[in-house]
Image 1 (cartoon, rainbow, N blue to C red):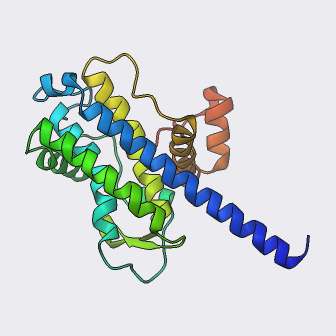
Image 2 (tube, rainbow, N blue to C red):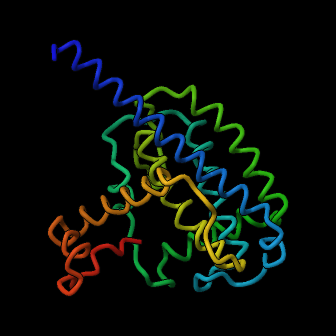
Length: 229
């Protein structure tokens, strides 16, 4: 293959990846819209969710925020400086299973604030945002940067990977919280992006050997390498 042909192939691959992650985000976001509009969410709005100290309302608000931040960050100036990947984004925070940690308290607080307008308003805002982002993401160029929580700089598409993780994981939480036996149906490629990003986090945190052991030799998985959130 000639150099010009190789460059063309690389550009095609980049465009394919860009379209895939943006489609995955929209698929997950549309799944959130469907679930947030369910009568079971309205009926159990003030109940506790399957997550300790996390109400159904706050969990719904967290899903809405996972969509809304994309819109907010796209409306802000693109940042300069070195960018972090999706996995590095997660490692920049003090993620712990301790539900009383400052990070986990802040997540619950932001979710509750986002849900304050009630279930109908939350569902409608999610629907409106997804409609707007469906059009906007088609126009945003490859390599577009965004400044995200904590002042980090990321590519838009790496940030969308983090949103897919949040949406896929918490759609399952919310579905179980309102009495559904299975989570919202998503395209396999959408959940594939979430799984791939979660494994990337595990590889950075624990190293490849630990991840391989966790996947294939559980008796040697002394660090629970695949538990990353």
